[in-house]
Amino acid sequence: MKNKIGAIILASTMLCTVAVGFTGCIQEGEINNGSTVDDLANVPLATSGGFVMPEGGFDITKPVEITFYHTMGKVLQEKLDYQLELFKELFPNITVKASKYGNYDDVHTQISTEISASNQPNIAYCYGDHVADYNVSNAVFAMNDFLPGGTYANETVTLESGKVYNLGLTEAEQKMFIEGFYNEGHMFDDGKMMYMLPFAKSTEVMFYNKDFFEDNNLKVPTTWDELWDTCERILEIDPECIPFGYDSESNLFITLCEQNDSAYTYPTGTAVNRFRFDNEKNRAFVQSLTKNFLNGYFTTQELNNGTYTSNLFTSLVEPKCYMCVGSTAGGQYQKPPLVNGEYAFEAGIAQIPQVDPAHPKAISQGPSVCIFKDKDPQKVLASWLLVKYLTTNIEFQADFSIDSGYMPPIKMEYMETCEAYKAQLDEANGTTGIAALSAKMCLEQKDAYFTSPAFVGSSKARTEVGLLIQAAFDAQNLEEMDEKIDQAFKDAVNRCIDFIT
Image 1 (cartoon, rainbow, N blue to C red):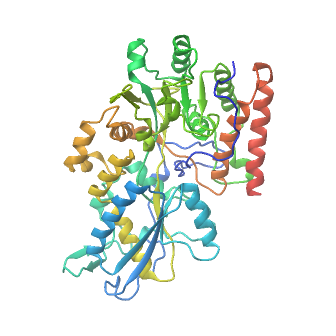
Image 2 (image 1 turned 90 degrees about the vertical axis):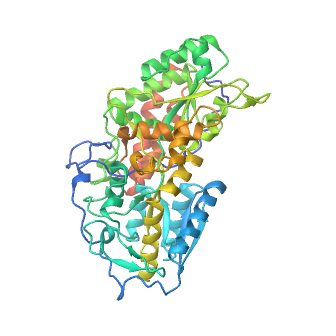
Image 3 (image 1 turned 120 degrees about the vertical axis):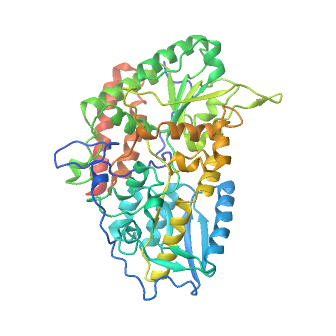
């Protein structure tokens, strides 16, 4: 049975880019798809990134203006603006011009254009594959000099108040970060250079209609097999629905590679060697997905007329869905609608379906921040001071998390010192507190996160595997499914190879 959504739109625009950073130390010939057990995390960072401190260090008397590109909406921008005011009280000579540029890909595109004219910003939201692209032009500042053990780690500056402020990241501040998120910043090349610090993190979770599940004695699925069985049962109860939605085809493919321990990409070597996702395991899960799509069990964002499946989840009319996988950063959009002043249902949040629930895997998303090189070292220093301030500021991270559903990159033991944040998480629920519930779920599965290799072409691979799934789902029946899948894999790999050759 064909999916009830209607016209299938095979648009090339993907969901927000996944955070990617190389998380495995691998030798030529090995297969790697990203892992939470990362050998590169154990490679000692270089003590210097090549920065040359100007005579006298940071000059608090010299006015400096720096630019910061991000994707924050109005509410989060207000949170940032408030912290920038506090930052300026510390450093009155630093003026920060913060600018929103659409989504993450828009920031990437804007900066890529500006780098060619040497007009890039000083700080920007980023993902690993963005940084890999920027560093083709050697444009990103390596933070090593200001990390513990770095050349200028213990450099200080005396503020106007007379307070002595440590310019570098202290060991105590470094320990605040969740290790996996911190380590994403140096998963490039040999793992010795730190190009990013984590700003806010998210992942994918499964939102489900808790009332519907309880009323129909349904168990929340933990595996993919359980999911498809549940979808079959839901269709028996509501034949007009689409039981399950998964927003991002790209994330779906990459996550299943990780859960199945199958090859996806490799960061070095020849073009043919880098794109390894055409293999037996991956073809098998795409075949399974296609069969279940043809059964009418689920849809995706692009096949849902390009709109998030949360629209189906919160719908009060058919077709609607009772489970959907989306980003925790969009938790507020999964809030059930009000009917006569009461919520139509209560939402629950669970981990996404797993191949092996004993060893769960969940994709790591959400922006990091990078600093760009500048001929004026005072601008680089001012940029570093702001990045350090925002990423280690518990008050800011708490406010940002509660209003967005993003997870702070800071360990819970530190975040709990903010009583308001702890109270919000304790009171999280599936209606008014769904953003907080999303952030809480992020924290609970922090050991399940993985990332993928970042290299020039990794962003292209992400796009192509999403298009691959869309092409496979265009099969009209099981008879033509295998032919569609075969062609989709070949086309995706060829387009990736052509992109970097």
